[in-house]
Every structure is written in C-alpha cells, then in structure tokens.
Length: 381
Image (tube, rainbow, N blue to C red; front, side, top):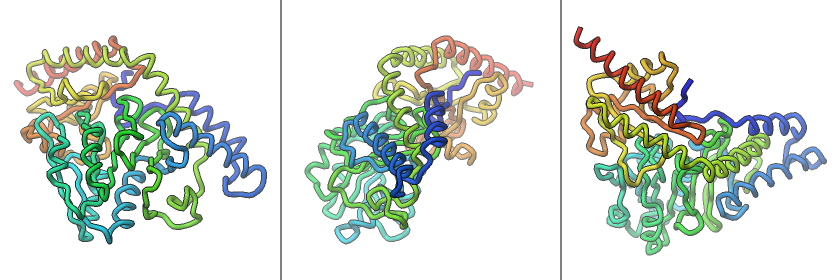
C-alpha cells in the first residue's frame, strides 16, 4: 500500500498510540479532581502543554487544548467576534480558506458582521498589500491560512503580520493546521494572535488539537461548563490525547530535521513525472509552496473515478479537502485561482509525509500514467 493522502490525516506513530494507552490505563483520573489520581492526570496535562509550548516557542499559558482544527478555528473566529463586537464588526479573510474557517465566517456574516473576502492571484497567493487595502478602523479580525490544504501555497504570514502592526485593533488568526511540522512559522515574532493546530495532521490522534492564544488576547468561549482551560474551553480534558499529541509533535519536529530532504526528493519525482503526462495540469506552484502537497487535474474525467482507479492499484490519494471531497463539487480554492471549472472538478491532491520515499513516488507516477492511458482507451471505445 502507498498512502499519499497525509493532508487528510496521518497514521499515528506507534509510540503515540503506546502513550495514549498507557495514560488511559494508568492515569485515568479527572484532572479537576482534588485527590492524588486527579493530581497525576493534571500534572501530565500540564507537561503536555509545556512541551507543545516549547516546540512552538511560545508561553505555556498561551496553549489552549481543544478537540481539533475545526473547534480551534471556530473558537478563534467566533471568540474574537463576540468579545470585540462593540469595537467593530468588520472581518477580513480570504476566499480560499478551509471550510471550518469559511463556514464559521459565513455564519457570522448572517449575524450582521461585515466580511471582506480577499482573492488570491493565479498561484494561490494572498498579498500583504491586498490585506492592507481592506483594513478599516472597525476591522477586528484578519484570518488567513498558513499553508493551503488543497494546493499547498504558503501565504506571507510574516508580511501580513507586519502590516497589522499599524492596526492594533485588528487581531490576526492563522490556520496553521497544514503547515505545522512541515513549514516553520515563528508564532512569537510574526504578529499572530491566534493559531490553530490539529493532532491528526502530524501523526497524533483524531479529536486532539490546540489553539495558540497570545497573552493578553480576550476571547469569548464557545462552550460553557466547568471553566477548564482558563475558562475558555469547558469540558473534562482529554489527558491521554494531549499527551499523545505532544509526543507526536516532538517526533514530527525531529523527523523534519532528519527526513525533510527525503520528502522533498519524493515530491520532486512526483512533480517531474506528472509534468510529463500531457493530459495532466499541475496547479501547485513551484515557488512559495509546501514540500508535501501537489495538486493537479485530469481534464475530461471525474476526480473520484481517478481516485478509485488508483485505489484499485493500492494507492491512496484524494480529491479536494477531505472535509469536502464527498460533495463532488468543484474546488473552491482552484476556482478562486482562476482555474477553469472543468479542471477544478477533476482535481487530485497528493500529500506526503516524512516516511514517503522516492521509490513510492516513482511507482505512483507510473500508476498515474497507466491509469490515464487506461481511461483514455475506455473513452475511445
């Protein structure tokens, strides 16, 4: 089996699973309980928080545990909107955000917030100048994804952060889900106030995530209850999941040092091989893109047909974002980039991790070429 759908989810490391099982079996207390077992659980939770903070180079008090990327994005966006609505109701985002950002903002729009959607250029890049041009006195939030989950473009987060220094009333939220562990981002020095991560994107477990909330940023909570997580995220904490997530992030950061070049080489083989298949069009730009995502189209065929054809060869890729792939609609990201609808409807995403190799890439390129030939012959008949 060759698994090239790592942007949808990753396989948990064995050590991560072992940590989850050990903590679940031996340290199962409620961290809010006063007795010793609860105290042990609370200690492990704080150790996990401290480890993630060190890896992200932020303060321990700035890490808020959640259930994943969707909750973190919703808490950041709706939390700022609710806490600062008296100061303004203008929000700036891009027209190619992940559904958990886009739909949260659409919901706010229905509640009377004024939303500006900034469009990318043909390479999928949002310029800092385009953000600056839309800033107003009543702007309370700017939300821009770090690495696009469909085409892999890297947005100029540091440049946008510099622009926002002249607009101190506007908070800056970054969806860091696809970038973490693959494309570095210094949260402390980039002007970011809130940043989202999700454990299952870097070989942790599903249902684990965190939100970086810069010290001094005021949020309104989404969930009311026992006032856990600094009163911002009520609910009994998933201690085993957070310990496992901290281990997964540490291991991923270490692997980046060891195997980034291996992953880049595998991606180079993929891009070079796919570019030689005349029926395919690559949408991921060579510059300003992440080393693990490649998006291309096979005009004339449905994307799901191609995905299942590769699946028959024991190769696993995806269409658009995993959260949207079952809708069988054209990629909103590609359409916003100016890609023709026929290509946007037939887009395939290949996404790697550090264990993927050049040999796998060569097998996948051959399988793609063979599948194109087979489908072409079917059409001719």
